[in-house]
Every structure is written in C-alpha cells, then in structure tokens.
Image: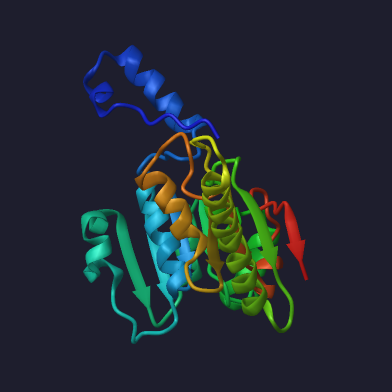
Length: 249
C-alpha cells in the first residue's frame, strides 16, 4: 500500500494546496478527518487497540463496553493525547448513539446479537471486525496466515510463529557454517528467514500491528507474515480487507 502522509505545513498554504491535502485525506485510508466517527464495541485488549488505531488515523471515537467496572479510556495514559476525540461509555448502550456513525468496529467475543449489531449490519451500516479494520492498514506485502476452529487455535498459532522464527535461526546458522567452512571469505547482506507477527485473539491484537505500521512508517515492514487467531464471532462479519493468504481450520 502506497501511503503518503501529508506535511502539516500544508494547512497554512493557499487554498489550492489545502484542497489537494483534503483529497489526500479522502483517498488515503490511513488518514481520516476528525469529523469521521468510529464506534468501538467491546473494550478488551483488541477493542482498546482498535480504539487507539482509530484515533491514530484521526477519527473521533466512541468506545462502549457493558462492563461498568472498566476504567475510562480517557484516563488511560495511552489515550491522554486523544482525550478530546474520545468518549467512553460503560455499563449501558444506547443504540441512538449509532446514528451518524461512519463505522462500527466489533471486538472479538462480541456476538452480533448484542446491541442490535446484526440488524445494523443488514441495514447497510459499515460494521467491521477488529481484524478487518486493522488489515486495512497493513502493507499489502504482509501475508496473513489465519487460524480458526473449536479447539487448538492458540496452539497452532504459537507453533506456526515458532516455526517461522526457527527458519530465521536455521538460515543464520547455515550462513555462519558456510562462512567457517569456506576457504574464501564469505559475506552476505541478505536477510534470510521470515519475520512474523503472532497475535489476534492470542496475545497482541492485529490492530496493534497496524498501529506499529503507522507509528513507524518505513519502506520495509517490521514483519513479513501475520499469524492470526480468528474467533468465530469475527467470521460472522464479512471482511473486505482481511484476506488471508493461508487459512487453517
């Protein structure tokens, strides 16, 4: 994905350049105007990561969870700089809040039967899983390996991550052995092996990986593969951006 982050100085340029900047915001899924409203349902680890990602993209966020014992995100140090664009609602849910919302992001473990999400989805409102919201930001060069099923998902995801890490170690040892046994000086600047992000329902949410891509933009992504555990609830929501190269059931 070709991502261009506009220079903030452009805000102070003549209207013609500002118009170009606004078109950049509209065309680039990485950047959205502050008037763009996102509603995050479920504030577990994935919900918090999705909220952080939406705020980093410039959206205004309403974060909701039925657990009234959770802390307000506005009081979390991770969200202090975005407190003006963030509102947390705990313990209840008023469906009227969804009026005028541009996107609804559903955390893993939240059934579509809750909060009228199923009816909202069928009404044409843009309802997205946290995985799909995160995958929209991931560079296209990053391949996704998705794992789902009744039992053993976490085991398979962990094992796949370890296998990919072992490939790096294997190739590193191979190069060292080749260098020591060669009568000639052997040097390579090639990086062999596969760097992988391991997460989803297991450990780190995919939105955290997407946030890293925004926080540290570079031509070369930090990882080549995302090994992701997928919940059954997330599979109920049609995906437009979360398109695994390999799926494992």
